[in-house]
Picture 1 (spheres, helix red, strand yellow):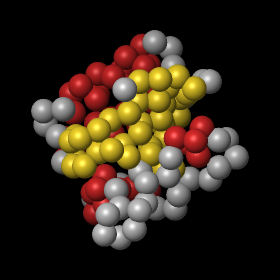
Picture 2: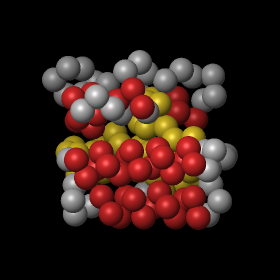
Picture 3: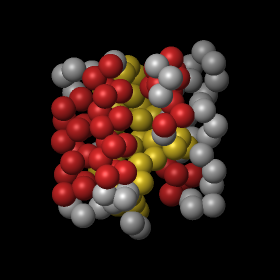
Length: 119
């Protein structure tokens, strides 16, 4: 679920990000910061469902990382219109997708020369 790649902490989330699971994701983000990490990749490529509480966790994570001069990158693979990332569609529908640096995979997120996907 969790790993470190250089200065980056990588948290992998799978299944659902909803009212039941979002507090655990929020706690893991706080644990990363408490551990002294300031660069976080949230790998959401295996998240099948995200409700407003999940979006709230992502926005709170962005705010937390910014407050400590850190970086947050999301992994939201674009597989096509029909089976693309549910989280990406939810963020876009709510008009907050542009707030996040999004990458197609962990390798791209960790590559300082790679550019984020456009919103």
